[in-house]
Image 1 (tube, rainbow, N blue to C red):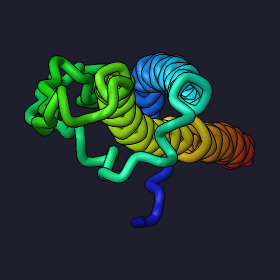
Image 2 (cartoon, rainbow, N blue to C red):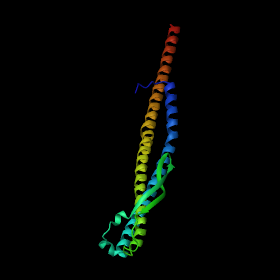
Image 3 (cartoon, one colour):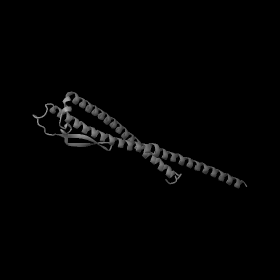
Image 4 (cartoon, rainbow, N blue to C red):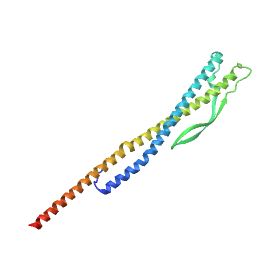
Length: 201
């Protein structure tokens, strides 16, 4: 950074800078608050979703104890065929949201398999969908954290660095201009006194 010129032109420039910086601060602070609120909502949704997954797991254990003796691979019965996301714009940050999901159930013989496999498939479909939502919420939180960090850094830059720096420069220039004005008054008084003394001689 170059040496600060202690003149009225620089004083006006620094004053304009402070005004411009102060305009950014409320907008950035509002953005930060919106991101914090959305992060809290997403964390709450994730906790609720994880609780639902846990209760689903307990439900399977209680209602289908015979599952442990099943010979086939339960995990491969249901899989995601297709899904689509929509992007929700929150203060300039694009957040993913699940729009639709299509699940595929691997064919199994209704007559040759256990009777409890049908209700098991229903629960599996629910679990697969919830796990997909869980992944999307994790991604959403990741994007919110990045956005929040950047916004906080920018807010701190304006609030704690740029504005105080410009205000410090303004004080410095005002002191220098005031000193220079005083020096000018003193010099002109001395010159006047000299002229008066010269006129008396």
